[in-house]
Figure 1: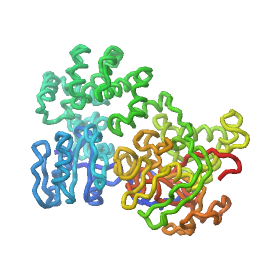
Figure 2 (figure 1 turned 90 degrees about the vertical axis):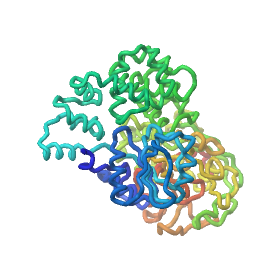
Figure 3 (figure 1 turned 45 degrees about the vertical axis):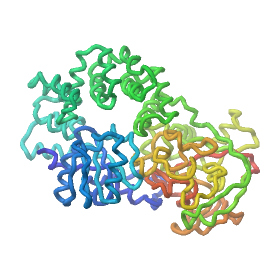
Figure 4 (figure 1 turned 30 degrees about the horizontal axis):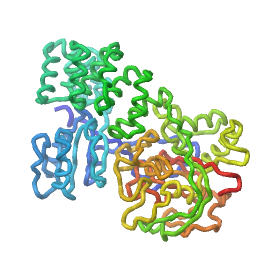
Length: 574
């Protein structure tokens, strides 16, 4: 009854849409404009095949039924079965409620029809979704809209304006309580004063699989778990971590002092459930060395879903990421295959030779670039510049000149520290060096695009449009996507600057293939001459997030999807 009054939005902005193909150019040091997010309804119109992710109580079901009524598409609750009509557009709710083994038969039944799928992010993020289905997440209800609703209805409910009540289910519950409440647990506790038996009822509903409102029942169950001993709670969690994660998280928010005793029970063994236990404990005891070690291991081994790995990386970021994010990978010199038949601007396929060099295993991160800013007082307009949760995320909103200035500064620093010799420099890669580091000796794949991990797309190997982050994520979250020389994040994530010239036309390069010594490495070219960017970014499809696709941007251009990685070579090489 409440949800239709509100506009659900997704984590996809007008800037993101305009930036496809790197068309965004802003003057240096211009403050980013506030993001304008598309509504969920606009996303349905924009993407004929769409997966909308949302947490418990995020309004997915009401939205799905409304869209089905407006469009005439068939609404189906997948929790009741996957018996689909043979033709017509589909609105499929409850993707998270099917058995994972049924995922492939489901997509075969869908075929290439228009479809909107809706599911709980905590479950669906672990699944591989067909790459032609766009993935976006629902956002919380806007607080101004909530305030306007309360005023129009003449309702006084301060809890309904809390951050927690941005969840539509909790907003509805908050309307039923008169006192103030900030957290989800606060809202539930105030409500339980009126319905004291509700906590056990919510727990029993989850245990029996009969919950009608999982968002609320999980919170009620969290309250009920406070009365169980640590061993019973851990046994329940490890038996089905997917079901009990929200309730256990609620328990730990209520009783953080129990984390120390329950931690070793939750993290026992090496199951996925034990890793999820480490994530839960980290929210309460973020500096526990044993927990941090588990989080690092799950990232480097590529365990759990990308969203889980990113959550682990955010915790490591705050505590001081123990990985060596300045590590270099040695790339041997020699001739290799460059280019691809997959795009006209990458043709013809040809042989190119490079000298031996080293290249960053990761793109330069926010933390590393911030050291340069602190030392030089250079301007840097980035919303991530001071975000402690994103220190291990690639630095973005950087011009070509910013990237070069960093390399010049780092050359001096590393020489003084003895990390490189006096005859070595830090610089940006040339286009052939970048591609060599990305693909090694892999030949052209013909119809199969070449990726750092081989021929053929792997949806768990890159932060691309198909992944659904819609933003740069922490570095190194996709270990299966590493290049032959150990480089990570060379497909998707961020577009990376090279030294190589493109030309002044965005769509067609002046400097075409074969690569040649024809002035395309002129470092003094004017501001209208675009430089080559490589690798694609988080909003690139698998056709661009690869080893061979060529992007470009003016050297003074920058946006949240471009950054760089460094090369170390001898002074007279490259």
